[in-house]
Length: 304
Ligand code: SF4
Image (cartoon, rainbow, N blue to C red; front, side, top):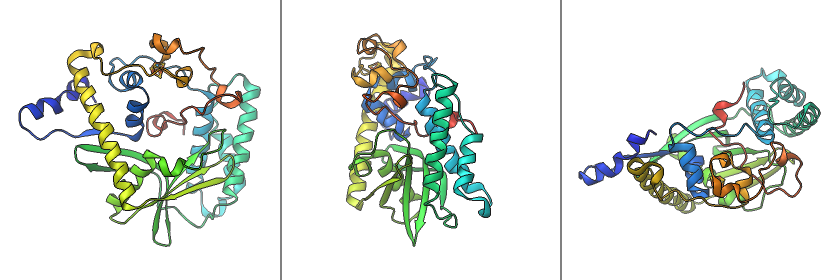
């Protein structure tokens, strides 16, 4: 969204016209919740402040996601666990690691994880969608996102999201995930069939966390997204008028500042502590779980 277009919703309201849509990915909505200052730098400032270079755990996550996507493109007879291992090797992203030894060690670990995960997947059970882009409009919000995998299990549509964090998932992660609920709502609208079940597949452990929404719980999640969008849209409009003088983008200083890609441009965040190394999420036992792969945004930059 350009700075100019960001101000139009308010102008339209003032003129008695219906407000314009606010288009956002789940990542964008959550960025506004996490830290409005980071949101401004990532989505509004032009030119966009340079981000720090890609971290090793992002490279690791992208390589795993790529292999799990490309595996389904193989001819049926080649869809084996070993083929998944080979896909990781050939598409490994050697960015952000401390040194070649660390990169090679984590590549082998990714190969093991993918191979073990695929050994439990039925190669005949072709998904309905792989990295499928989905979208829906509700009120003045338009949500667009990309689903790792969409399964049709005996007539039931299931949204699958791969996770690659070193730490295990929490038991409530599938139930509380806003992106997953929005993807399910989008699938329901696009396929004109109920989609209530969401699954997080933690590839390193093979753990699968499942949650089955109700139509009411999905509606609550969509309402939550619309509430975030209203705040973000208001802030966008203020930015269009005042630029960086807008007061609607305060920094939210906390532990994630040590991982933030924009902290070089944020004096408040720099005071939170020293920046984490590019490989800290792989090796630092005391690390909080940082934001994983930025769905949609980061995927577009990955190698194929
Ligand atoms: S360093 Fe912290 S406060 Fe600053 S933009 Fe990043 S997350 Fe926000």
